[in-house]
Image (cartoon, rainbow, N blue to C red):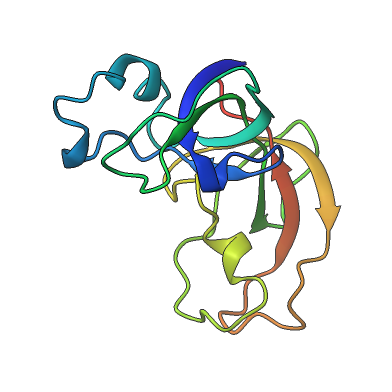
Length: 148
């Protein structure tokens, strides 16, 4: 678990986000060390909002930021069916131009990179699409949280 600062509108337990790193607007901010303390590209989940904290002014978040507890989050993703089982490593199949497909968010999930391997923690089953326009045989899985 880590403590960080997050925009007030996003500060709800269960909210997930991918930390993108420092913004140009962060330059000179007195809260940089409390805010810029996560690993870039990692998906996090808010587990708690610090009720005793105050809302701090922020050049990035117009409603200010508050202190929250976060943990690296799991990522639901479609991977090639062959060799996909809990405990194995999986990779995304590659980009897909079919953004209207109900599986698109799982074929290109936020927080996962195409050239990386991820530990599969659970097999979730069939993807939400009826057929793959790229003729891929896919299985919906859950990648374990990042170790970063």
